[in-house]
Image (cartoon, rainbow, N blue to C red; front, side, top):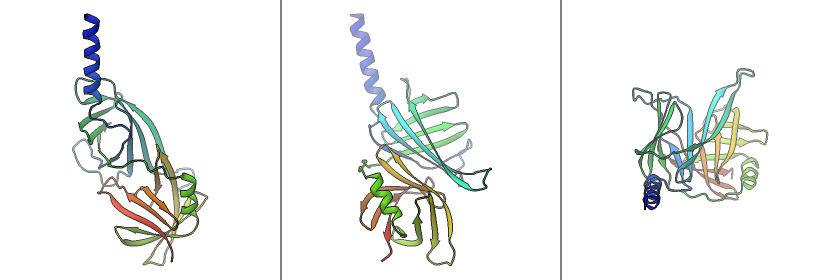
Length: 227
């Protein structure tokens, strides 16, 4: 009888523990705040979570930093795994300096070293875009970026990991690093001069994406070949 009761308690705890985390979903950062609750405009940290299990997240973090050796600004990509151990509350200790709190089935916060990172769940599924096809289409020729139907820049993605950026209304151009990241089936193009682009559809001559910036709401965009 005692063993049966123990199994029931474990079963109920497991259901309660995982009920708010939908598996195989992508989450995005929505703001970065300091210990006083002030929004940090220039944090330059973008983070995504992928709920691999009901009690586990994979985390992707990107940040641009100055390379002290070369004087160039580089895109750095960090990955780790967050395991949520059973808890009587909705707050889980990830490390001595980091905790995760579930607020609802589509909202959570991570606190680290005095900073708060809110996350929201995206209503998206991995669309299984072929990474090599995307690279080929992205690097084939210059592309005009359109975000919410506003065209401002021409991007020339190169095979050497650098992208040339030219404003359409100004006679100037610069070059910076970019990375194409496969995050559990979600493809993200991360550059220094623009917010992360979550690729949603790939057609010949057109790449559709969602621009995800931790400071703002999501925006729909396209990269189109010059006609």
